[in-house]
Image 1: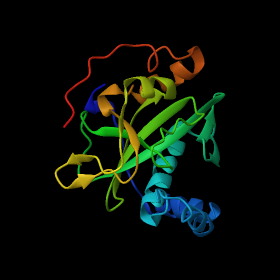
Image 2: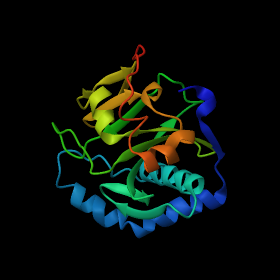
Image 3: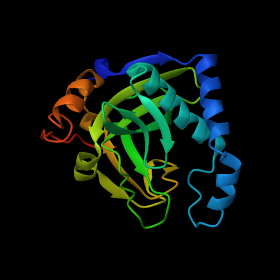
Image 4: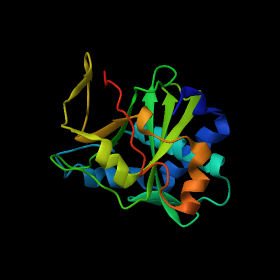
Length: 201
């Protein structure tokens, strides 16, 4: 995995509009009311939710019409009979290989393992101008190489996780150029290969 493998998007107004339409379709306000009953309020920030949908728009544009969007809690797309969950992380600059690819939990003291086959990790800058698809990893392999972090974990000075999470690094992902082959031939890259972990900051 190298930085040159990232797929960069200039995020257009049309892409933002599409993400905002997904937000409306999701009954966001109603779902937030239900989340108030939980101790963990992850998923109730509107801007973060739009950011997640921007990740879905990028992935949908990259994979094309063969990717069927389902917007289900466990996965976002079905593509070549594989279930795909998209994760999009907000950043201030260009993503690096040591950046975290993380999956947050909806509940405290709980590791969330969704029923998807693959995670595709994306990044978008905070003003929604530029985004990147970093790569993919099978869900099983993600939890093999990832590390559980409790809510409040300080990953940078003054920066804390807002929910329990499992994280790996971008280095652990596989380039999207190999995604079709993996979908068709079965977990030959992202699930089986051994990788030397790099230092986490």
